[in-house]
Length: 300
Image 1 (cartoon, one colour):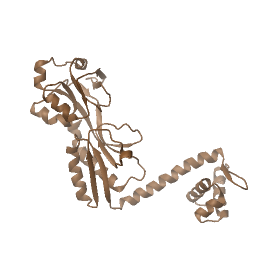
Image 2 (image 1 turned 30 degrees about the vertical axis):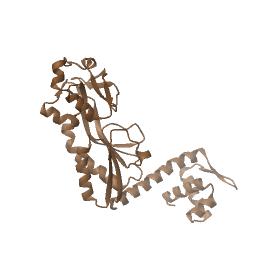
Image 3 (image 1 turned 120 degrees about the vertical axis):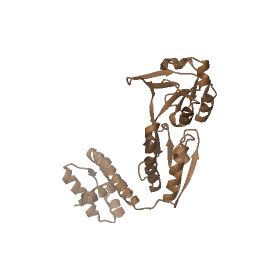
Image 4 (image 1 turned 90 degrees about the horizontal axis):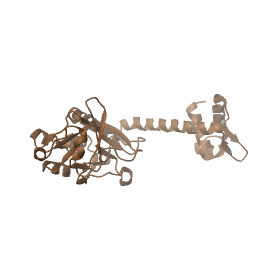
């Protein structure tokens, strides 16, 4: 007998609680249902179901086999869906959340995507907060920091690092740090969603991790507010390189401790689950991955 069919029949017997109910569900004779289950048991050399005149129940081996075979069948269904989606034009509304700092890189992707797939509309929301994708109904987030929900799926678009910097005017009034430990004596402008809290992390020239506990007179979710304060000589800033790259090039900010590399992070596409990923979402992620790859060299 066909093995996949037998697996499907076995699963229906378990879910329906009996051979007769499974037969009705499958539009199959009770005898044929029994033959499929018997075929599996003969092949495995174990009893999968305990049978009585009134009901059936799983044996210990049957319970294990049902759990594994159910996953296999689900994976096959997902593969069928994914292949079918390759030939399906995306349509509908794609809801995306991202941060202000990333929008300069994401906007060209959005424009190109809408040109490629005119049947899709995009609802793009921008903010400086940790978004709950499931609760708020988003299909996708493009984020520079990890979201707190570990059940979410993440695909890396490009790595990036912070840059430690301050204004020339700040250096005129304060002794510049020569090692990371010196940072603790300065007013540090802190980003609320920095993954390590008030512990700034670096790697020395030998690749060893160095951490320093910092403090300052502001903690905020706004990277632009921190940038503004740094430009106005309010303190030392640990900012994403892509936020202050123009200020560094123009000399408005000065990079500190260039021999110490800040910890590496990723800009990632984050979505609720891998199963049955809509075509509109998958194609946007694929396009974003291609375009963000062009930024990798200078971002990291």
